[in-house]
Image (tube, rainbow, N blue to C red; front, side):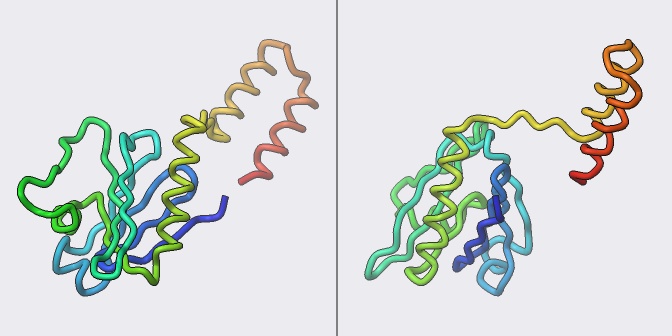
Length: 152
């Protein structure tokens, strides 16, 4: 999967299929949140709120993190709260489609469930263990090792 990117009013969001990255670059982003970066693994996202922009109001995407206290609006608008939330990015109509693509990809990744990721190093250790126990010949080990190292 290629990295999806969306630039908003108070930050940027990117998604690589496993992690949502919220970055704060630009004047408004720095004024409201300071220059920052927050990585959220898709498995840690408890809820995703997406409000499209209208004629008079910008839209926003907001990620609720499992285990974190939710920032609910009390007497204020959802948009004002989203502007203060480090897990939310506000966007205009111009970038709506980019944010909708990020939303859809995150939801799809959530439905697939957590991917079991095994590093190349872990796989090599397992193969070496199989070779040492005699389950793999040295030739089979060398072939698999070359395949794994070719992925890097």
